[in-house]
Length: 228
Image (cartoon, rainbow, N blue to C red; front, side, top):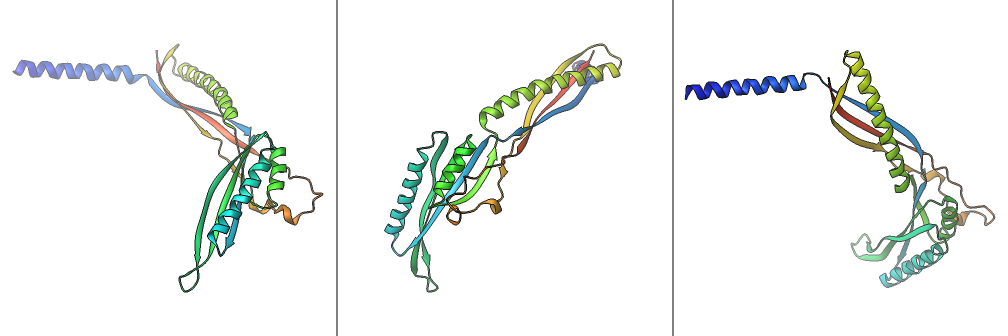
């Protein structure tokens, strides 16, 4: 029994020493590459709020506005329009009794065509209110840029690995592990102060022009190399 114990102890020491040797020349580091990318996707939400004594009339008026909005949007082939949240709720007076009914509905717009979207928004604001606008990077553009950044990040990793290997006085290295992650590309809110109801404007004023801005996209590689 004593011999088995000693043998197991020697094997454990041997494996520990082997593992220490294996990881002795390993170096962990990270590289990151980034790029400013123009936001090419516009997302807008328009809302309508209606209040009436009769809930049926609220629903009817909401549906009329939504149907009209979707009909107008159908003329813009480059703009994707869809219905959003819609609800009708009671409004209580100070005696806790139902006084009126409040209806709410929204239309969601999404497009790469900023000019067409601006023209549609101008039309819809005749009966709806512009709630918010956001600019983002479209999925296709995001995928393309991410692939390009990954290629750049891998080249940067190799360059850094060669520099480390040379500085440490070794000729070669091998990759032990690599982990790739990405970040950035958050949508940029459009200031509410720049949103005005078209009903307050003259008909001769053209549709708004949007400055979408840029978003920063980045790819990071965390990895380890083993110096040879």
